[in-house]
Image (tube, rainbow, N blue to C red; front, top):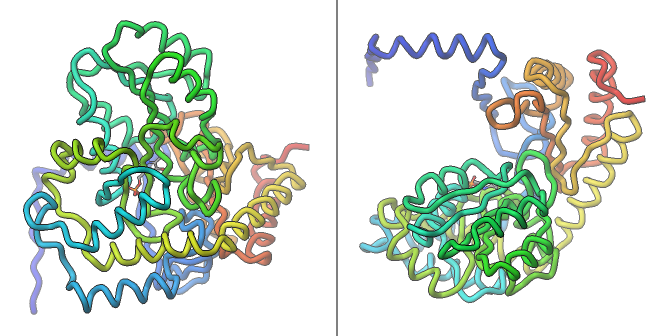
Length: 400
Ligand SMILES: *Cc1c(COP(=O)(O)O)cnc(C)c1O
């Protein structure tokens, strides 16, 4: 087959913006790797240790999940064929939803294509004129966009995890028809956990709905990875939980765990469900296998937390203490230039740690975000800490 490339010069104006991003050290490029997602990856034929993956439990290539996907292809084929409300709801979709409801100990769940679309599905249908959405300033981009899409509702942003501020925002809106507090369960750039007991107490006092986006908490926190709500033993006191299966669960997909009525409203009103086709059966099957694995065995979660404690102790001993409560470890260095430099030097030393810069984080809080996984060995962790010590000295990052 011959191939032809056609180029439109009407898009050349984009090149100026690309140059600006490069000049400001904000430019990102994609770095493909060969083979499977794991602790050791190959890039351009070179072995690299992967310290940036959300594959917390190493499930992306777990034999049970892979087997489940292969089996589902033979049984159900490779596509759902239509959006869920037309003829795209296969029995296996509802099997996963029942399994997730049991796992999250709630009445009903609805699965969406991703965590991103789960937020789009959950927020806009339940608020409108006269309501207010109250959102932590460090909430994930998908919450921010879902709030933007919630026509009619007012929004109020409170400073990160500041409970006094949340209390006064709630008071300020006491005349609102309904109040919806939305927070990340584990904040995706800092790795700190939402102050959920206090948020829930304030919500109960002010009669507000609480929604937690637990993308980085699912499979990581709580018994068997049930998440942040379980970690704080707040079952029944958080109204809506969004989770993802794209991170610790190793596959792909988001879900909203709540009540039967919430599920029904989303089936009728959530645009990502009404206008976009659901997962193919192979993905659904691997999600079911992942949940079953979590329910039956928590050794991977224990290993994840063991690795996390080991890594943080090592980083502290070299003078780079990590301020986070989870396996998500930000190494905050300041300018985006410095963060990019640190990331590049780590790469030269065989460590993949992605720089995170503005606008994902504040311009003066650029960082390399290290994520500890259960499949890191002690040798991997030691090599990462040694690389940080060496480069930390070069770039004058170590605290003495
Ligand atoms: C990663 C993330 C998402 C998006 O999840 P996907 O399944 O990757 O779309 C949503 N919310 C938060 C807090 C996240 O960290």
